[in-house]
Amino acid sequence: MRIDITLRKLLSKHKHTCLTLTLLSISLISCEKLVNVPPPNNELVTESMFASNSTANSAALGLYQKVSDLNISYDLTRILGLYSDELLLYNQSTNDIDLYRNDLQPDNPYAYSMWNSLYQMSYHANSLINGIKNSESLNANLKNQIIGESLFFRGLCHFWLFSLYGEIPLQISTDYTVNAKLNRSDSSSVISNIIQDLLESEKLVNESYVGKDGLTTTNEKGRVNKIVVKSLLSKVYLQIGNYEKAVEYSTQVINSGLFSTTSELTTFFLKNSNEAIFQITIEPNNTTDAINFVLTTTPTDVSLDTSFVKTFSPEDQRVQSWVGSLDVDDNRYYFPYKYKNASVTDPSTEYLTLLRISEQYLIRAEALAKNNKLEDAKIDLNKIRNRSGLPNTAAVTQETLVDSIYQEVKWETFGEWMNGWLALKRYSKFDAHMSEISAMKGGQWQPYKRVFPVPQREIDANRNLLPQNKEY
Image (cartoon, rainbow, N blue to C red; front, side, top):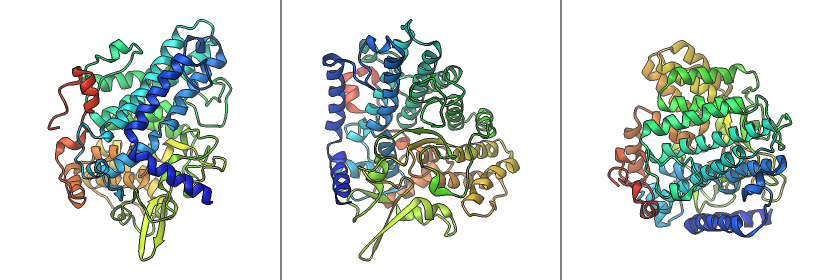
């Protein structure tokens, strides 16, 4: 136990103070590998990776591994949890305080970190697409699966980037001379490209879940298949206000019968749970989310915001199952406890859950409510409320029902990727809510802060990214 705690503290200590250097190191190491070493497992290196099924599949698995290696789940959760209303800050570095108080400037490393990680992911996906398409020696089903997976991740990365930065450059090439001069695309073009990637992905990937070889069916939920793509499409359509399509795709996922949500909330984030639609396999150890969020001593970085915890009803079982607490002297600290296994030496028992069935019910509920189909929306909302130990909603009007669904989404999805942030951006009272939250943190909210600034280092390298987001 002492070893685990020491390692966790070491990871936490260095993660935030050396953020920019760490990210730069990752890029430099990757470039060095591209030039100097023979093709290893899970690294996209040269055209030789696409000469056989096994090496091409290994390169595809590297795309999944990158989600874990780049700590994307933890970084999205921490950065947006601090920026919004989920996390309290104890770390007193200037960059962290500016993030927390919604005073993010273009030269802040947090403006750069997710830009860098998500474009690394997108580039890896593009490399796979190009390499696989040009290969004539691969199994046809495997080719389709890998191209479909790559389109899924490229669409996902562009969706996250768009949700953070607004208008973004669409990176769909591996040609660095092209990427170095990209302009930012307007919102409609970005959205169209995301949808196009996902629809094409849906056509190409397998109907069933496949295993590590990319061909054999499995009970593991660690690779993209058609139902995974449909789940993301429902989420994207909801976010852009296409409620009919959000209902269509969420209904297909719910009616598949492949998943179920129960009152056994502690099982939701375990490997291959019935709740999970798509999980990022974490092996051999456990999630960075648990390692960094689970408290064993007085927090020195972040904790779950007490004000947020108090919004839960006492009978809500999610508080019992997903909110941890630690008492130190006379103080009680809360932390996200969806991922519980914080050991860095024990075998993994939990996978990063990217998509799950309860969210699909809430997506459909919100889309139905916004299309004024209130009774149908209540059925889906109450399914999630009832399994959480809560009574049926008391909402009657469209406005109160939509607000109730928003609050339910916040309770249900806190501490998961950027789900809370996406819900906030759909909330009709978003600016009023964030004005109150920012003031409590010592900041001042302005509507332009709905999007992050384009990183200054990216603008310095490519003036085509100008103009900067307004007011920054």
